[in-house]
Image (cartoon, rainbow, N blue to C red; front, side, top):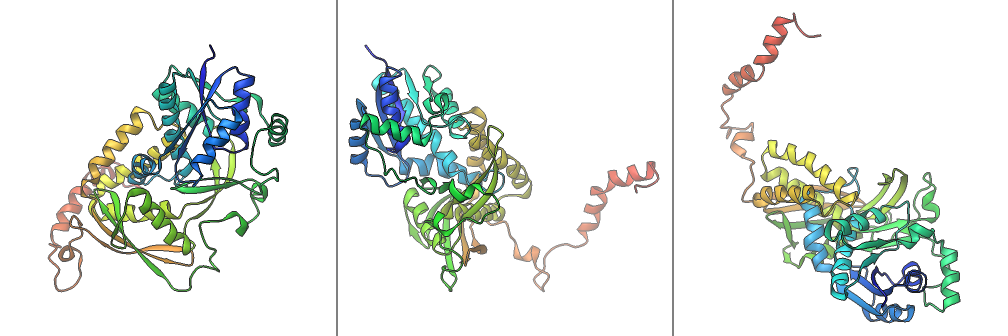
Length: 399
């Protein structure tokens, strides 16, 4: 009796070929598993393609709401931006896909899971570590990494074995997309001195083509999570899509980053992340309005660690879960609305309201309503500088 393996299946060239390679050359019965995180693929066609490629069963999961609530929103609470720029769209989807690989493996009694990631990218790390974190007993197979299968070799293999794959014409770019963002790689983008062409973008308008009138985007939060867009209450996945549609229309969300991959390679990465960029901007502002300064300073450091952990594949780790618990605790006061002004690729906060806002007009104003005790500042400064004063007295001043 043959062992079973669950393959992360996209329906593209690489994973379609891997179904047959795992069946014929590795000796497994293959269960194809696809978790839909917002890439808008036909589920029935995916099942049929997997069957024709040789899969004995196919699991297709509509995971958009799960992705939004259990992956995107925790990252949003952490204001997670890798290297201060990238909202981790692809990185967030990999642990979710791995979660469903493990679930399918247990359902079908599989002894292994497999993916089509290469040996120099980030995804191999994310898939492998997610599986190790959830199901260390499962074997992990990565034929692309083990054999370095080129696109041309994959096309030849598909033709030889009668495997239905996308058009034989080589795509200009390699695309990966989900609710949180769109990754664009390859082609002229590998020349780091060249501006990304308009052909690379699909979700964001160019500055030239964006509307000539500014738009206002009001995002409402409850306990750190977005719930409304311009007053309309939406499910998490639909809310992300709506924010992305509005921000993208105004040219917001394009990212061109020299990125440090997990394996140590520098890579030029191009993204479109209109929803995540706008939501993180609004969320950060509401935190500044409702959370004490000392907590914000600590949180900013932990947010960077959260992003690093996610990027490097440690989503299912005790530290990442502990950081989320910290964020959940602080989020209890992060309720209110933030207004963003969008215009020709620019985005800025222009208003905020909250029942928990820590701004006190009577303390902040320099006008006639000023209620701040200015005389108290002298004693505060004396105590604050006391140790500096004594050190300087002992050592004859500091220069």
